[in-house]
Length: 365
View 1 (cartoon, rainbow, N blue to C red):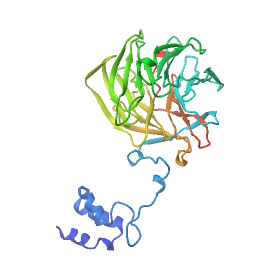
View 2 (cartoon, one colour):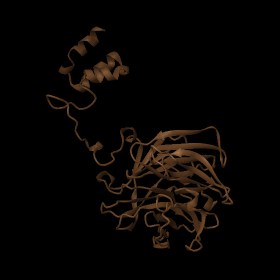
View 3 (cartoon, rainbow, N blue to C red):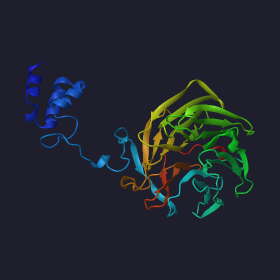
View 4 (cartoon, rainbow, N blue to C red):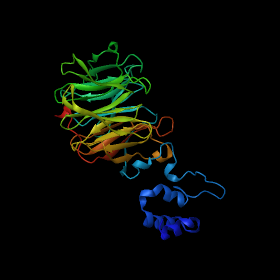
């Protein structure tokens, strides 16, 4: 031990904490940060005389404070776009048709809504028992819907015409899935998530339905409530979120139903409950709505968190049930769906801008 370090460590309590840290760092380096903090009074603010005491700082208050590892992300706050209802409807499945209409659902009621560019709201499919949860639009204009049914054993996938007529089942309840979200590939087949399972019984997954809608192929299995799903702009990477396990999956594909060698990864583990639906942009970034956290996380093509969009009033516990994001076609403008449950704010669509234009989906190809 050098004379200088002896002098510093002999009397740490006589120094201001910052001065102590500075002198210790200059003498022994930050590789011994643990012992440095201990010598200077620990890692947090000093408690009152007689013992240390935890205190609620502003940045850790509220139901879901931003985790320390994500506080340094590039952050913006969304703006109000349209209030759907004074009730806390479980809005989901933001999707745009070729006319620029925004289609979305109320999961618990099964209703499918349409919001025009002039912000006129109407109903495409009235309330029903199908549990509409996810929407993907075919290039011919048909609306494909993933339905959770009773959330136990009546899940299905069906399509309707743009006016809500012609309901046709593709994946029946007898198939045994709980379809939650879906996305078309360039060939007209689609991937869907199976919302079944739990952390102790991971029986959900991601599946592919062939373009003729006759064959279902498992892609990812043993998932604890598979939720969101999207494709990279070139269609070679499949992304999925796992609600209960809090994981972001990245799957490199050799073809629609084959995972490339060493092509699976979990590049991100989410803090807190829970990753929901997702979309990608033209740069390959991925945006994940965080249900019960009132925000959207953005990831680069490698699954590294690079930004976040906060919803208004989240710091006071409102608008926390953020479920879905969607890009206005041809732009980097996004809509974000959320509701306030019984908190009094109702159900809202918010607006923000992403890093790049949204991926061109099959509906607009």
